[in-house]
Length: 328
Ligand code: MLT
Image (cartoon, rainbow, N blue to C red; front, side):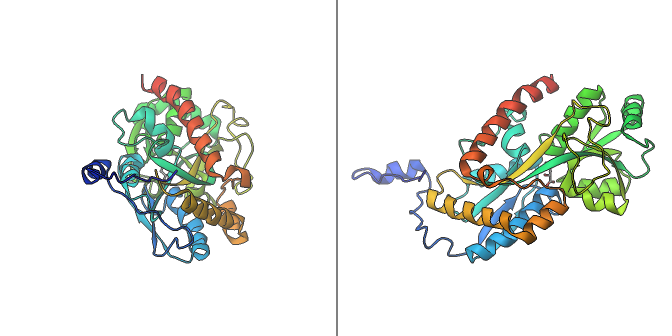
């Protein structure tokens, strides 16, 4: 959908002034003619940052322009997402959003200054990211069954790290804590990159996080992993049981990360960006890096802008009643 404002013959200036920024149509065949900014709404080193850097590194080759990652933190990614919604719709400012910024935030932030569906053009899904239950390496429980018993018995003494109210790590552990009927103290960070550092350092007790942030730590023995909240085990962590195997089948959680552009970005630019993202997801080196970190790479049909629009709509519909009930 092109934001194409009609310049009126008389009074057009006043009309245009109240329409807000008028963007000259971008010629797709020329796009991009300069570097592109990809806003990452969380701190460097976290899952959204890592996925963004892996995929945009290849996209930049295809597009022939550099893609500069800009980490903008705060309020579980909604600060950055609000800024991206107001950016020029010329294809030079994009954002990597996810289940938190583009779904859970809707029921959790009544005064949200953007709407995921109205203020963005979906570009492409990048990766599905199964959720893991993690703890500091000296956390006493040896397995998930003991984890459940220990957390129930000690909840008022325990804390759980997350990346802000409405972030993936917050929402998924809210779901887990509600199922276990426990209320640990939440400890917010500007992303699960810094939260993971605190977990490795033993400053926090446990966390629900996206697999891409945990595989290196688990393989390095610097944290404990109890279960993965997907129906099947993940090839990158074949020994990690599913929550169903561990006795809590009700806890199922997989997040996702995706590229969005401001509303009104020309369809021809969206198509170019979508093609570059899809080409990256078909590249062997990119695929290996994403799969080694436990990502679920979307099939071609799942990468279209239309598929992402449908995903955002369904995720908002799914999380709104769950989170409204959890916050009562
Ligand atoms: C991150 O990249 O830090 C995470 O996506 C934050 C979150 O848990 O949503």
